[in-house]
Amino acid sequence: MRFRQAIWDEPLLFEKPSNEVEPPTTGLVPPKLARRDLDLPNLPEWEVVRHFTRLSQMTFGIDSGFYPLGSCTMKFNPKVNEELAALPGVRRAHPCQDESTVQGSLQILYELQQILAQIGGMDAVTLQPAAGAQGEFTGLLLAHAYHADRGEGARDEVLLPDTAHGTNFASAGMLGYKVLEVPSRDGQVDLAALRKAAGPRTLALMLTNPNTLGIFESRVQEIAEIVHEAGGLLYYDGANFNAILGRTNPGAMGFDILHLNLHKTFTTPHGGGGPGVGPVGVKKHLAPYLPVPIVAYDGVRYTLEYDRPKSIGKVRAWYGNFALLVRAYAYILGQGSDGLKWVTDRAVLNANYLKHRLNSHLEVPYPGVRKHEFVASGSTLKERGLRTVDLAKRLMDFGFHPPTVYFPHLIDEAIMPEPTETESKETLDAFADAVAAILKEDPEVVRTAPHNTAARRVDEVLAAREPILSWRMWQAKKGA
Ligand SMILES: *Cc1c(COP(=O)(O)O)cnc(C)c1O
Image 1 (cartoon, rainbow, N blue to C red):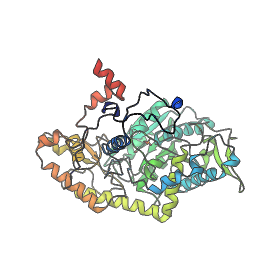
Image 2: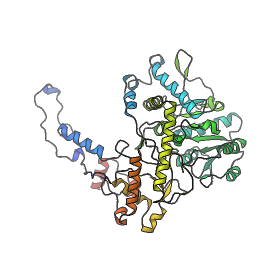
Image 3: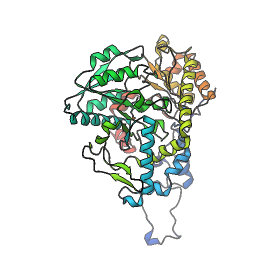
Image 4: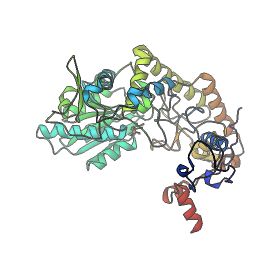
């Protein structure tokens, strides 16, 4: 068993002993131009380099180890994407430049629109939304614009399965829509309940497939028929696209609108609150309402098309998170269509292998195979006075980022690993072995974990109520 290396507590630069170097008195800088009395820590270069290197080791990222954070698709981000996004033509392009001077950038955006439409089984795509959640917001605005155009603007109910992600509820709520929660049965949408909920006030059903339990909604076409017959639209939450790439698509399942989380499925780096990019695709009947501008191509020139009278307008500044769009474009072209299929096959295989390995240690509700992730229950830990959160924290001592916990809500003490395609069998085995070892440990050791990290168990309630986010806030708190 390899334990994560214990990491020292690194002081801030301000707290380090200063004045180790005398400011140069002679040299290339003329004395009258030399800046004096700067309020900066006076430290030699090596101290600064070591400081930032240590800080980088006090956190956990996909480049440091296994990061099975379910629903978030923390896969490795190939470094070649970074190099391409750093090319001067990409890095230095300014959004105010004349179209004629950025034809290459526009070509990338145009081709990405086409590729994502094909991947999603859609007819048109906007690259603007900043993340999945904003894609949902955009998609609901599109659904409203469509209904309003047909004289049905009063539709104000959004149907959400009880497995839905929290952002679905938030997006519908932000727009003032009424949310009707549809219960699930054996891990899938209860069709009888859906029939009851769908009606003349249905704006849309939002669904992710496979759902957040990692279970494929095998009756998705019936679901689509029920919602369409009621006059509603179908919105596909694409956060779980890693499970279906190149195998099927939301268009084929009957969806009208989708968002894709490029930062999940297509390897643009994410975490710590950003950055993201959440393009939205639609079928033909919704294309006129897409945000402006759309990138267009007439066979000779690429242009930004603003003349779209039915458009809902803009949802974000400029043209989307360009540097991330370039990374996703590079990733997709790098894989090719067979490669994308391989991604999904391997991600699904990895999830099912890990489920199989953990089955004897944790209860996994609902029988059958999963797609790219699965949800287990830590309820049996209670017998030893432990909870899922304790297991999650202890995993950090073994060098693993904890899986998602307490989501989805319908599973007691939920723990949700998503290994992604990046990981090897050796890594998955080591993770399963760590879980097995932790379950045999002294409960007190587990309850007080983590022990080997820079920060020990944090008081999550206090952290949310009284966040101290900067050195100044910390000083003020200490002084108070
Ligand atoms: C991540 C996620 C979202 C929200 O996407 P963001 O890009 O984080 O805004 C929505 N639904 C599901 C199922 C997700 O996993």
